[in-house]
Length: 166
Image 1 (cartoon, rainbow, N blue to C red):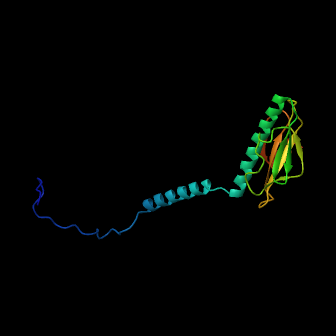
Image 2: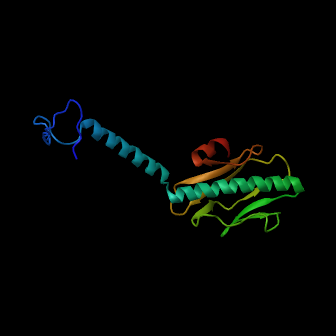
Image 3: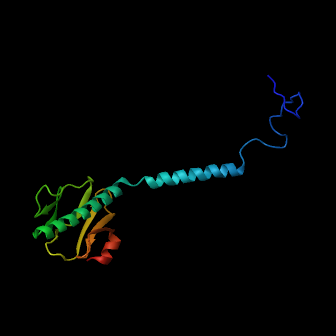
């Protein structure tokens, strides 16, 4: 069924597929927009993907720092000394009930560098403390959990930790 509009004759002429002087394809602007979108998508994916070993080490370090602060607070509250010691399977908090804190590492290849013990109280001010954690699969990369004795424990890269704590 034909529709008639004022100003248009009844004869319909087919349009040519393309104008003779114009080539088919994408413009440079369209290609640049697509490349920019692809670059943003690639950057987003690469930032969201982290090294599994490094994130395990950071997660264990943050977890241990929180547990050390919790044990330090419990030591002050109960007026009993709490000592953190590393063991071959993980670590232990002496002076707290055995069910008070979890003892294994989250990562399977996280180890403590050095055989040490950290006294967490009951005094409100303790001496400067430092615990170094490393990964068995990447021994060159390690993190330190440090405190100056007054402030809370914090996680720092080894280059940062050596400047603040002995």
